[in-house]
Picture (cartoon, rainbow, N blue to C red):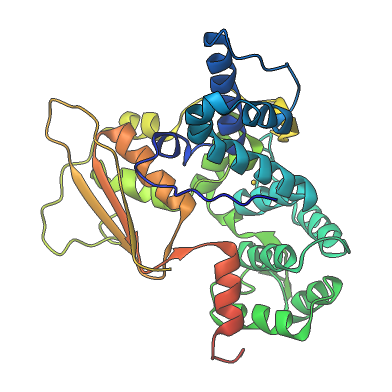
Length: 349
């Protein structure tokens, strides 16, 4: 097999356009642009075939269109390989559980009971074909999102996942960081298993609206960083939680403007059964023409930022017409977090 390499960067106009889009949207756009190219070039005789692979292979067979191939090859290949991973690792079903855990509501915006979440998690943990890192990621997410879990409950879940000693130690290291909420909801001396957003009505309502308006079921969750950026630019941050070094705070804008910036209705997609999944870094928004001077906002996160949060910086920039710069001590991905925990020198408490 011939291996090819390509660099993804600002010089690639397709990468700039596609990098923050859902994989299904990218797949559709790439396919549509390939079809348009073929249609517009009468001499291109590509037999109509279904599926990503046959289309890509058909283009490879036409050396006279190497320039076009160089433009689309990377993105067609990436979507093709991504879909293969989704199927091989059953990431569609894993992603649905992740979204339910992160949001506290299902794809229809209905609250998911703690017992149902536990059942769904147990099914994934007992799956012999599931990858260890996927099980670890689900466990860590479950432990941070649920309250009322006892140490014995956590132990039972780890045993159900049939983790190695190294993986169990990884979970214990994570728990020792105390990023999760302890048993705080008690009745008659006994703890009650509940989602942590049960006490946060505003955030729960937000995710209910997101579930009904999101284009894809695996895109329901939105990082809180986006809300933070929007409120900071609109002058609506809580002064007690986010004190100013210098009191140059702008006046608060109307709530209707904030609502319009955070609530966008997008038609739900139904194709492909989506069931609607370092070093210092900074992401800077692309400029948007405006008669008024653009506000500038810099947010730096100690501990690192995620790709989803980078996307939020671009979205807020476009929605509010501001230059948003997001930075952090590292770029965090699920495999990297697990690797850091495994390799960290500190011992589990």
